[in-house]
Image (cartoon, rainbow, N blue to C red; front, side):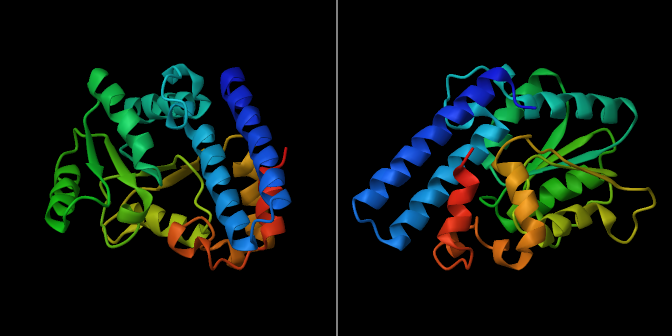
Length: 234
């Protein structure tokens, strides 16, 4: 469940989005422009689901129910001797997490798409060879392929990926040859939001959703404008 403040911010952006869409349509905007505007609004709503600070930097860290759930999950997993991969498509969200982990003295590795192949491999090796480091933060697209992370036995997806195959690829980093333990995977979903709606759409229109939320595919995605705009509504 989102926090009260998080839900309030979500509704505020949702209502603004609907007004903006009506104004754009009334002004004769093309379908292409409406589609891009809708995708931008959906991005904001998805960010609020993760952490209000991504759209409202002055929000307190306590306003994110998802990060609170993650804190509890990590504390329990680490206490029980598990090692955890945490994936997000938002590097800005991972950046908010890192100072908090440092403050709590929780050792962690980090990998995102801006790092060189050598830097990435260095972090992977550090995690694999350091049983005392319980946590690895990874951007989903950078950490989704080609990595062997059998040092971990727990995977957390902080935000749902609209293409389930990409999500599964990321989880498979811990399922590589050499993994001797059972791997547990968690997906954190903010209830009553666009995240739940997209999970429902995944089943109904799985193939169409595959690339909708990647900027490179946004303009050519086959999902109709009506489908996209339905995600914005309350």
